Length: 307
Image (tube, rainbow, N blue to C red; front, top):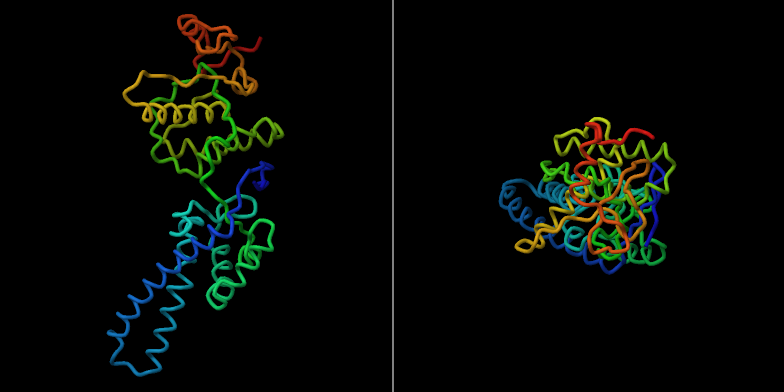
């Protein structure tokens, strides 16, 4: 596990990709690129049969550069680091700070990849990856990038604190289909590490993520609801929907706020009793009627007035 630190001082636990998985991903990309190159070459030979030899050579070189060099650069830029091979093996190219790559990163990786992968048959890339602590080839070193694994076993994921009980289920009508996986990952990483951040840094990150999430769902956060609580409630809603789909046909089980990780009442700075699941006998349960009465006594924003 490798810990990357973003510009907002958030530690991201990412797993650098190992050489075997990277080699297989590159091999799959090369097979696809070569197949496309051969098809295009056959078409160009038929189309340029009337040209002289110099023109045919120029067209062949141009097609080689565009397909085997420019193609991977364009794919990594448009997909933010996920080529066909990386997608198949659950890999992604990210910046050193964990952010998505841009055109200049893909350009440097592709240009240097011509030498260390195509011209040397991958020998230089393999040696550099074996020597590097995080498995980076020369293109990654000069571009400031890292290839990481996106598919991490669910049992190793950090615990996401639940939302305040009075926010649970409040966002059941949101359309979450337009929220990309990258944004979900960023929100989860923030929620699992927000207690480790400086309060000002954490608040700024929560506001930015809440704005991005609201833009994707088409519904802004309710007035007066803290950004961190809004993020936790939306993630809780997505988990509830996933659980409902996974256990379709069985008894409806709502996600339980709280849990064994000591996050008590949910978000920092939010007070209020927590309705516990009957399966936790050592914690005091709050009857549903009392919880409804307690929520009715709150203001429209859902916050309890300061004591």
